Image (cartoon, rainbow, N blue to C red; front, side):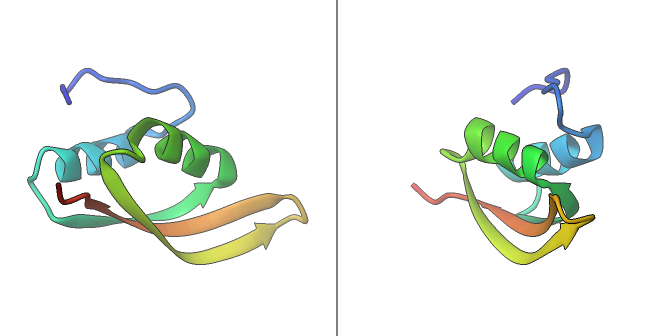
Length: 76
């Protein structure tokens, strides 16, 4: 995954952490305060490369799901 990759709807700080796992700089990262939309983007774009474990979910203002997730590289 190259450094210039951008994904609409996903914060650069999350994308940087995801890249560090995919490129094997770290084994796992924790993403805090993901919205349901951001979580879905990560699953759609990176679900085949990453194991995603949801550690916490919250309903915010009766509609937005806020998620804490741990991402680690899938072993082949």
